[in-house]
Image (cartoon, rainbow, N blue to C red; front, side, top):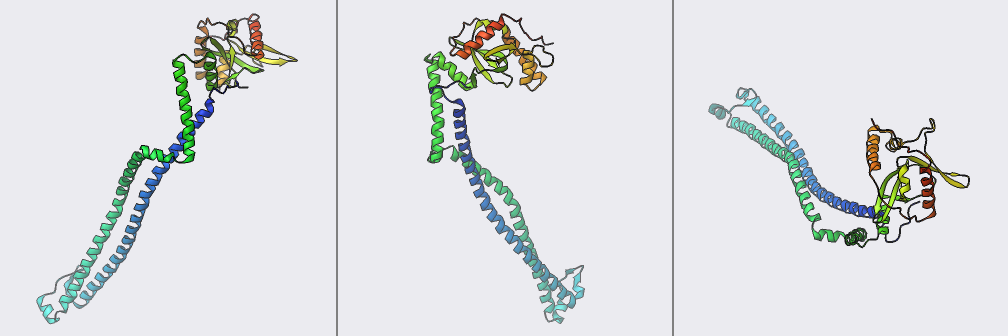
Length: 351
């Protein structure tokens, strides 16, 4: 079971969740604003593109009609004056042809030139619209970038932020996050002023690091480290599921900090033994423990083991910390007795 948390000790998991909820909600609102601004720009450009597309379709139809008119005019000119159409192009009639045709030759020729001019005009219009359509992508990109920059300025302005927090849900989330921040700042000030009792330091650390009150039976645990809080010192135990437990420090247990143990129930009492492998019955070492806790990844297990051996070799001159309940007293008594009856189960050296 977890350590009972006094009302003065924060629920760090819930506090972290509250802060993250506020940050993610704020982030969603900002992203939604950005998306709205960009969507508005894209809608405007979609309307422009639709208009250009419609104009392009109309210009294509007009161009086709004018090409047909030009072909008809050229055909009429070729029928009456075939000698004046050279390689598909109309040539201006001579004065004699104009005179003999009573001006009809010039009228037919002018019809061809006017039709060709109309084709050229339609082609120019179509090219202009096509260029405008191509430029629209570049203009859209610039407009989107401008909208994003404007949105950045807007969403960082105090006015926009204040307006956002007029929403009740956002206001509640902000108030919860600010309450957590105030509590942390208040604690930091008390800590700096030396006004935090050792018990509060301990309880906050255990709550923040998810260190549990000792609960038995307990299988495959090792002495993972020692934490101190003023005059209070604790062994931090770790089981094979990587759960952490606090045990008041007792110097008698230093002799077995390099072992892995099981606390189990026998009939009507608890007992403790050094953990062994099921098949070989050889001692289950700290290195074995790190293999299990690192999914049998050898590099990680051996690195953790080397760090652990360095910790085990460090001298520790702490005094015993009083127990707070019968379970702690029972476990310490069992481990202290075990320490006098077995040799050091130190794991083999790493080669």
